[in-house]
Image 1 (spheres, one colour):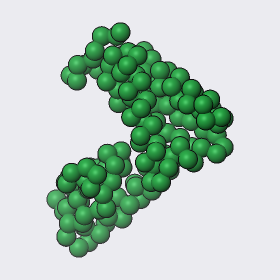
Image 2 (cartoon, rainbow, N blue to C red):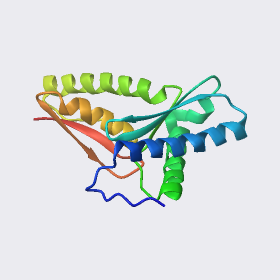
Image 3 (cartoon, rainbow, N blue to C red):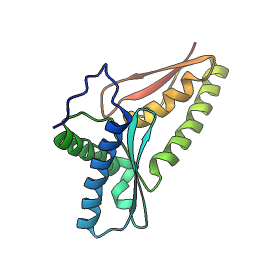
Image 4 (cartoon, one colour):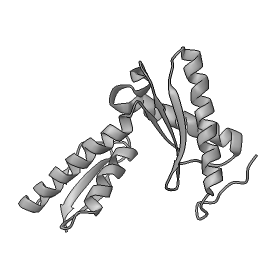
Length: 164
């Protein structure tokens, strides 16, 4: 078992890559069981291990609104913890779903920021996953004149965008 990384410590790139390899092995086993083909890439982007899977007929692994993808990501994180002993912030993407979702959410955040600036009224967005909320917060934080915060409890947690 690896040494547990405290929250105030940053894992090395090698440790992060090892996490992505463990998760990729887990997903490769799952694809074999399901008799699905997919190309699996292990990456480290910033301070996060990532696994990206592309291929045909993988839509069921994403599921409605990415719910199956979120569950598979948690299973990958558990596989990393079980093998290495470290909690992981691993990000799993299947069929480019997260990349496409990030773009759509960026567009939504920009439109919402403009609406809030123009109306000087707060706007509450629909409930979102943690990944989706982070995508919105990132765009809002980079936009002058607006600020954002999350409110509510899972699974109904949402972003509220307010004028500064």
